[in-house]
Length: 89
Image (cartoon, rainbow, N blue to C red):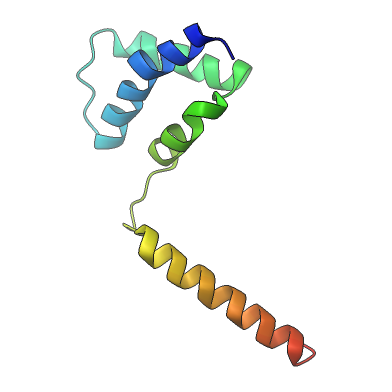
């Protein structure tokens, strides 16, 4: 992706996504920006360098799972998967 595309994401789309995630959009012309963002995602995708910031804003985290909670359950899942494999399950 071009540097101009990354600038657009940093200056326009990510702030819009943050406001949308907060439930309050203050940016002027936000309706038009939402349409542009929707078109950008559908036709061009999210730039690789922006995905780590964009996806959490798009998906949300209503259950407030912290990185520590996520790691705990991931470790727990892998440990149980290994136990099941060892027991012939």
